[in-house]
Image (tube, rainbow, N blue to C red; front, side):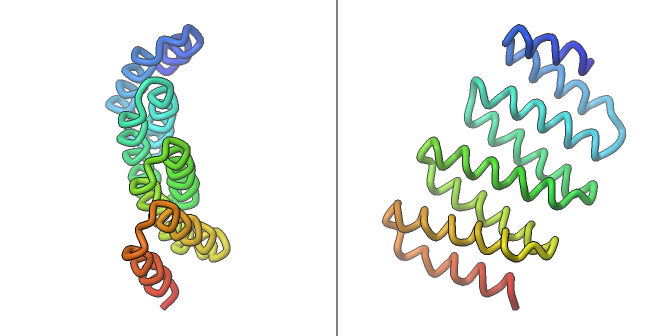
Length: 145
């Protein structure tokens, strides 16, 4: 099934590739495999739909967390946040950066976590959401206490 998905990707038939990857998810038994197939589906979805990319990316993050691959989940949350930022969806990007910060903190990657909190705060300033800046400060306080 994943070979078919790869063939569809080569043909740039993104929807069929997504469908094949999602079929792989339904047939595999290990959570780590779920995450990989969901990630592949998300990357294919990114070509055609930002909302589908976000949905599949969040599912992949959850699957990575369930399989104990927190660093992979954090990296994907950061990737999603950067993509949302490029699309000027600052509100969703802030949420994704905060999720990445939380996940990096769980893995005791403090520098990465701080970097994500700073990005979230920067986006709040860019979007002139000064009232929510306190939320970023609160998140960083909770993560480090």
